[in-house]
Length: 366
Image (cartoon, rainbow, N blue to C red; front, side, top):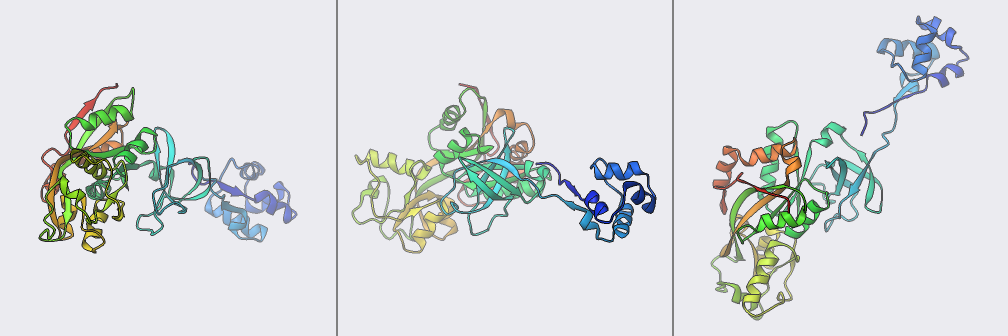
């Protein structure tokens, strides 16, 4: 996006006043060449000269000079998340040299970077609400960890040349966005050792990447206080009449449930429970009585005053293409995760283990 362009109407106003370039130049005390250069757009007059021109021509300065409408920026448009399909408000960032825009939820909790003027075929024209330097400092991060909100706040407070925008997405969705060049960083949580490295190779074939640990946590069953149904493990997922919160296929919670169900000889998720978009929503559906249990991380259960039955230890990692990891603004995110102050904060958050936060593993190109 270029800087705002000055829309120059001096020639039109001069002719409407019946003055030649020589006559106008003589009245305001400059050369004819100066008037010619201003009309041609090669020179921008000083404030005093602009006022003299307006007074001589009998009009306002804004009748001669005004900012031209911004033509907007052309951006790739990411897939719309549930609830934002019709939103015209977008977050914007530059990924691998191309502008990318993501529709924001209509509730307006996140400040927009731009407005969609038109969209077709995965491309959109965006009317920006900030300058290109500001938008170029945005880091688009997809992942489901609620802790990413705190990471975004810490980066945004600490640095002037980086701003993290967190977009909640499950494992599969986050990695698909990264593979498609629609975000800078993708997060995922897996129980198996080395799972993030394998996922990085699949998402970024032929490219080096970094896997940076955000935190470790436990994932399990979120239940009512005191666990009144006595739920203990995977076999309880098949208990008749159990109202279990469902998660989208491709999320870490769905994958964990699928493994547990297969171990019990079942291959389908129990029907009948409500669908949740993330960990926090799982806990709230249980607390509000819409479900008996759901699979989520321990921290959201604790935050909602609920019980928790651990099922798996997991690592939440961020996958970052190596060719962008060392350059601002992405490097600011990586630097923050390795900051002792961030680890100290994580260690004091219930349900999180920050002992490995900021640890980097290099994944060579497959």
